[in-house]
Each structure stands twice: as structure tokens, then as C-alpha cells.
Amino acid sequence: MKAKTYVLEKEYTLDRKTAWQLLADNNRMNLYIGLFPVNFSPAKQDGAEVFYREAHAKVLGLVPISWQEFPFQWQENDSYTVERRYLSGPMKHYTLKVELFDNGESGTRVKLTADFVPLNPLGYAAIWATGLPAIKKIMRYLDDYLASGATAVFEAPQKQVTSKINLPELDRLAGLLVKSPVKNEYVELLHRYLAEKGDHDVAQIEPVNLARLWKADLDDTLRVLLYATKAGLLNLSWNVICPNCRVSKVEHNSLSELEQEFHCDLCGVNYDANFDQFVELNFSIHPTVRQAYVEVYCIGGPMITPHVKAQQVIQKGKTASFAIPKGEDALRLRVLQANDRVAVDKNAEAIQLLYSDLGWSQDSVSGSDDVVITNSSSADIVVALEHSDWNKQAVTAAKVTAMQEFRDLFSSEVLSPGQKIGIDHVTILFTDLKGSTLLYETIGDSSAYGQVRNHFDFLIGHIKTNSGSVVKTIGDAVMAIFHKPEEGLKAALAIQKNLAEFNRTANEELVLRIGLYSGPAIAVNSNDRLDYFGRTVNIAARIQGQGEGGDVIISRGVLAQPMSAGLLSSADVGLEEFSAVLKGIDGTVDLVRIRLKENLVIEKHAG
Image (tube, rainbow, N blue to C red; front, side, top):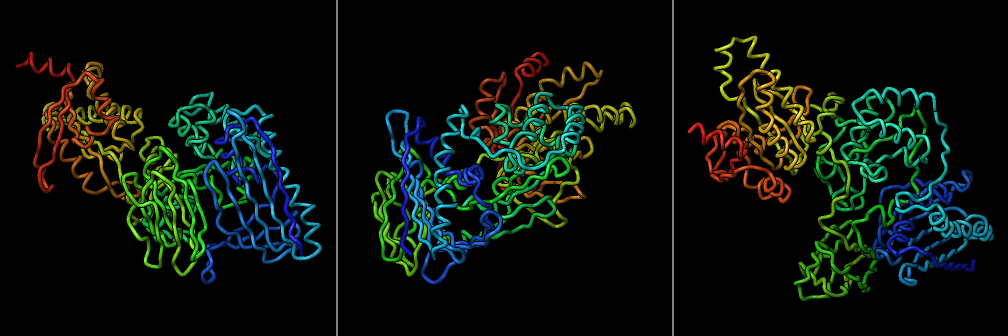
């Protein structure tokens, strides 16, 4: 059958970056223009050809078709191409190329080139009935975006609500949520979002995007989502993300379902699960409120992996060129599936690379010009130019499990017994009540215990306010966890600053020692509670013992963090650096003692 090629061009008053973000978000765009959802199989490879995924769908919900979908090829903000080779149905082959060109200072010319190769005469009818109209709707998608008055891509037009909404139940549960300690305005925003947004948006709610849409603080947004889950408006899920391709590999409804190791078929590598890199939290509307599902249209589009700046298929024996974006650091070239990597370094001299069955010809390549790659291996390869240190803006398990609201509302959300999940970076805070033994001896067990309980409430309030949570109490000591060092430092300073007022109000004379340390740890299930172990925890417990009372002990590593250093430079504190030998810890540890200036004055007067 003779191939049919169609070219559509149009000029838009959109900058290229916005046009790219709209057109390269294939799932959202295909949903909007009314294409059929697709089921994809794991990646396969036949002989020397590049890998592909088998896809299955039903045209108009009736006619089954299947095809091999090959990796998208793209250059960010410039163009992308998708290729399909059909296994069943009236078509034989299809490619779509989307190109963007500058058109004046703030305009973009969009060019779509669609090539259809029918398998039989019915294929020509399919082109006119579904293929060509779908291409035209891509242009209409941009027209509708401009007509909507949207000012950001995440406000792009969406498919109208199709699932049935149980409004009485939505209203009832929203009424319960209002009674929670969250802002009423957020409850109203969430009610409107769940009632008006399309199925895709309510079936996969990403807290970061929702906070951006509401122009709200992320922690405030996350709190209302957690309380909404407890009220029955939402469900939560944990997505395990591949660290290379950054695509979700598996979804779990509970932390107890997490496995210690997972496999990525696209990268061909096994990974250990990790709380702060690979496990992300998402929410979805509860089915009693609305039956909404995430329909999949694409699993290889550019916006699914926004850390990838360019991606090309290089056939064996062929050469390709990659344009290196200017002003971007920490880039690398990686062969998908083989997972072979080479750094892009502006100080390197070579601008040409050779890839063979043994890997790359060198460890780094210059980033000052286009890079030319020759594939001398025995198979076709897919090469991605990507950010090596890119981290998707998402709510990770490390962040949410450090929030007191999460522990209070979902105390049953723990790992399975014996499971261990690593965390690359966590901040542990230990407090200790100085002279507590004498306190019990002086005022008796009952009164002393009452004072200890009161001071726990005081500590929890400041820990919670600064996005931390109490892991456990040990006698009169508290162990708390924070996602970021500066959050723990803020809590520690606030505790010491407000302790005097607490003592005056409670008619007590409590003195606290506080230690703070950041580093890797292991999350485990300990007595049906999410707990943390490892060297970081041990050091945090030990450095708390270096306190003299009224001070905060941190490591020099915490002080070196820009946010922590900035916080201390603006606080009224004195710093004293010292080293200490800690019990059970090899070598000396470099520490910093932080004293509030008001405490320094008191000490001088006492001296």
C-alpha cells in the first residue's frame, strides 16, 4: 500500500518552552484529544534491533489493534519523533514528528509531519476516520490552551469530567475534613478540585503540582491531603521510581508491601529501594466519592522523563550528533538498557565518542560543543543525554514519614517485619532532660513523671511545627526525625529559646541538652512502629551527651549546609567548634556547640 504523508503547520503566540511542555506531555495531550488508552508490555528486544514495547488498544473501544512502539527520539524544546510498527489491524507503520521553530520574539511555529503506511484498503479509511483527525486535534489543543487564558502549563485544558461523582458523599466527607486542623480555604480548594478536574488529575494527585496550582505551601498542602485521606476522601499510594529513567516501576498501597529490591526492565538493572530517592507518595480520589482511573496513552514521551534533554536511536555502524544545552551542568550520556554512562565535562577535550560492545571509548567528553557518537557495537542502541543529579520535585517517603501528622494519622503504616529500607540523608534529633534522676528523687515519681510528660508535649509542638516527627521517647529523652537539616536546627533553636517561658508557665526548672546529626540511616519496623537505625542515629544520640544544658550540639557537616549556615548567621547565637571522642564511634567527631546569646549572658552573670 502507498504511504500517506500529511504536514500541518501553524503559528502560535507561545514561547517554545511552553509549546514544548504542552506537546511533549503525551499522556495529557492524548487524553484531551480523545485517543484510546493503551496497555504496554515490558521492554523487548529482537536480535540487533533496538528494544521496543508491545502495545495493545481498541479503536473506538471496539476494534483491537497491537503494535511495537519504539523509543521516542527528541531534542528538548526542538522536536520529537515516535514510531509504531503494527502487529495487527489495518495499518502497517506510523511515525509522527513534532517540530518547533522560533517565530518572532514570543511566537512559535509548530510543524507536524505524520507518515501512515496502510496494510490494506481498510487502512486508508482508518487514516481518514481516526488518524488524520487526531493529528488536527493536536493543533486544536494549543488553540484551546490559548483560548482558556491559562498562564501555566499545569493549567492546560483538560478532558471534561466523565466519571460519576457522588456529590452528597463528597460534601459529607469535606464536612468531616473541616473539623481537622487544616485551613478551611484548602478544604474548599480540594472539594472543587475533586469535583471539577478530569479523571486523570483526581486519580493521580501529585502534592507538588497541587501546591503549585493552589499557590500554596507544600507542607500545608500535604497536611490537608493526609487529613483528607484519613477522612475517607482520598487514598494514598507509594510509587517505586527507577533512579535512572525516573519512571514509576510499581505502585503499592502500603509501606508494608515495599520490597527491598526492584527491577527496571527499561534500564535492565536491579536496585535497592530507597526512601528519599526511589519511593514517592501520591494520592487518588476514594472510589466511594468518584470512580476515576489513570488511563495510559504513552510510557516513553519526553515529559515522562523531563531530566532527559535529548534521546536518539543510533543504529549499529551509524553516527549521530547530540547538541549539548548551554549553561547546564551535571550532564551525562547513557545507553539505555546497557546502562553504560559517560560524563559530559566542559573541561574535557574530546568531542567524539565511540561505543562498542565493551562500552564507551572514554570516561568523559567535552560539553562545549556538539558531541558526535559512533555506534560500533553489534546492536542498535538508544542514547540519552540527561541530568545525572536531577531529582524530580516529589513528596518522597523520607519526607512524609518525617512529618508528625503522618505518624499520628497513619501509625499502622510501617514496613513489613524484617524489611530494611535505606535513606541516603535524614536528620536525627535527640533531647535529654538534664538532672532528671535528681528530679525524681527530689519531688517524687508522680510529680516528676507529670513534668516529663508536660515537657514531651512542649517538644512535640516545636518538632511538629518544623515538619519533624517524634520517633519515640526513651525515658525522659526524645528521638525525632526531620527530612532536612535546617528543619531540625530550627526546631532545636526554638526549643531552647522557648524553654524559659515554658518553665515560667509550668513553674518548672527544666534544662535540656539537644544533639543533631545528619546522614544515612536504615528505616525498619520496630514493634509495629517506623523506626531508624544506623551510625547517624548512634552519633546523634552520643553528641547530645556533649551538651552542657541550654545549648545545641551539631556536627560541622550540618553547619556546612548552606541553609543551616544561613539560619545560624541570622540567629542571635554563639558558636564554638570542638572535637570529641564518642563512645562506640571510631575516631574523633567534629562538632559545633550553639548557645543562644541570652544563655551566654546568663552564664557570664553566674560566673
